[in-house]
Length: 143
Image (cartoon, rainbow, N blue to C red; front, side):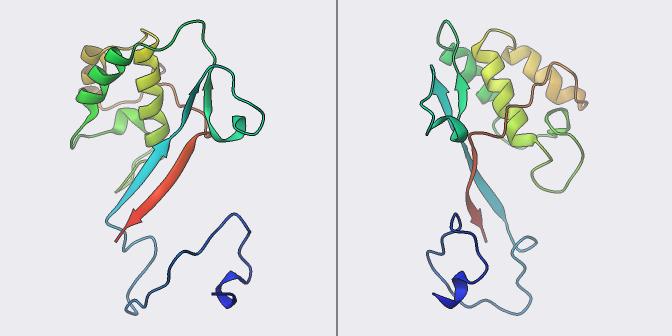
């Protein structure tokens, strides 16, 4: 494994290695991706802050409203309203836009009915906020 570390930054850790066929491509052979987005309620300490979206609001989000919007977003949809441009997998800024929609729901700015209308409209509108990059992590690539 030591030879595999050559040229990699310390933030990248190799946990396992296995042989693949010659046609394998790390990006184009992927069948899916799993992301996690970390939100922090209240002020975060200086060591946590770079890795979370800090929601330092006077009141906690409405988790029931967030769940109702999440229910609308589950499944297969045309997510063009939640992306910055088209693609054949996750669209550019899609995960961050979906997270932004959930937080907007928690703040009372978006509800399930409006979320469904956005999905069906297929166009990105100004009310779809993109969450900051802090907090977004690619957890796993599925092959």
